[in-house]
Image 1: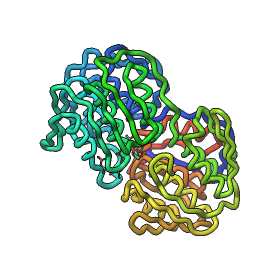
Image 2 (image 1 turned 135 degrees about the vertical axis):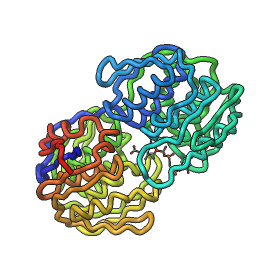
Image 3 (image 1 turned 60 degrees about the vertical axis):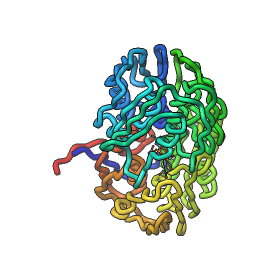
Image 4 (image 1 turned 180 degrees about the vertical axis):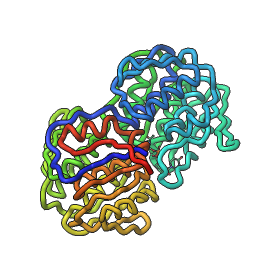
Length: 420
Ligand code: EPU
C-alpha cells in the first residue's frame, strides 16, 4: 500500500508555482463536448480527475491527445454516444457535467450517479430541476439520470442555494437553448467564471458570470479555439497554510491574489505577514499564531475546500478556535485522523472547536477525502517525527506533484510502499 511519508519540523521556504485549477478544468473538459471545432486546453493540472475525464470524453467518441503534461487537444466534433459508463461516472464528481453537455449537444444524456469525495449527502436536485425548466424530460432509473429533449428553451431558473455544480451544469446546457436563460442565485466561484469564459471564447453568449445572475443567450453552434485554465485557488491556499504552519516564508507564484482574499485576511488576523503582487502571494509564518473563528461560505467567503487545512493550522494557534462548516455538514470526517496526530478537536454538528498550542506528533493516518488528505500532510509538516498518510488515491485526484513541490520548499516528504 502506498503512503506519503512526512518527517515534520522543517520550515518551508522559497518559491513554488501553482497548477491550473482542478474545479475549473473538470468543468471545462466536459463542456468541450459542446464545441464544434478542435479545442486546445492549456494549464490543465496533471491529476487523476483530469486523466479520467479525458478517458470519459474518448469513451463518448471525442478524440483527445495530451501534447504535453498540461495541454489537451479535444476534438469532440464526432461525439455521438449519449450514455456514460458507470465506472467513468464514479471516477469523479465532475462527471455530472456530462449531463448538461450531452443534453445541449445531442438532446439526450444518460449519466450514472457521480463519484467524488464523500462529504455526506450531495444531492443533484437543482441540476435536474433546472434541466426540466429548460424543457428536458428527466427521470432517474437505477441510479442513472436519463435526460432527453427536443431542443431546449431558454427559461428563468432560480437556485435554492448558489450551487457550483448546478450553476455550471445549467450554464453549459443552456448554451444552445433557444432564446435567453437566466440563472438566479448563481454561484460566483472563480471556476464558474472560468467555464463561462471558456464557453464564450468558443462562441457562447454568457454575461454576468461571477455575479448572482447569469444570462445566457442561446447560439446555434460553438467553434473551436485555445483556452488557458486559471490557477488553482485551493492548491494556492494549501501552500499558504503550509507556509504558515511551519513558520516558513513561501512565495506562491502564478496565482490570482483576488481569489485568495478570505484566506489572506484570516492569516493576517492570526499574525502571519501576507504580501501580494500581480500574480504572487508571500506568506511569512509567526511563532505566536492567534486563535480565530472560521466560517465557510460560498465565494467570496472562506472556501469549504480549505476548511480541513485551516483546522490543521488552528491546532498550532494560541487558544481555542471555532470552525463553522456551512456547505457540507459532514466535512469533519478527518477529525478522528487528526486526533491520532495528537490534535484536540471536538465536533458538534456543523461546529468544530480546535484547541491550540498542540504538540502534534507523527502517526499513521488515512485520507478520508481529497482536502482531508491535504490537511493531514499539512499537519504532518508541523508534527514531531514521521507521519504516514494512507489512501493517497484521494490526494492524487486533486494535487499535481504535491510531494515534489513541497520538497522543493524544504519539506522532508516522499512516497513509500509498505506491506500491510
Ligand atoms: N446542493 C443541493 N442540491 C443540488 C446541488 C447542491 O442541495 O442540486 C447543496 C449541497 O448539498 C451542498 C451545497 O449545495 O450543501 C453546495 O454544493 P455544490 O453544488 O456547490 O457543490 P458541488 O458542485 O457538489 C463543488 C466542488 C467541491 C466544492 C463545492 C463547494 C467540483 C467538482 N466540486 O462541489 O470541490 O467543495 O463545489 O465549493 O467543482 C474539492 O475540490 O475537494 C471539492 C469537494
